[in-house]
Image (cartoon, rainbow, N blue to C red):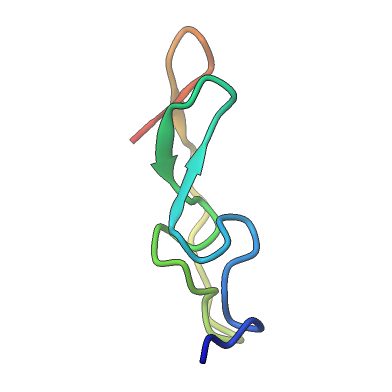
Length: 58
């Protein structure tokens, strides 16, 4: 059974997000794993690159 408390709500556990044009990219909340980080686990902030149309570059 899937533990809904640990599943990433942003990507619904798939690890992928899509913009309004259909471009898919890794979820920035769970880093593409589909599962939220453990309590107390620290993550470094990172600046994301975008192209001229403000699409995220991986």
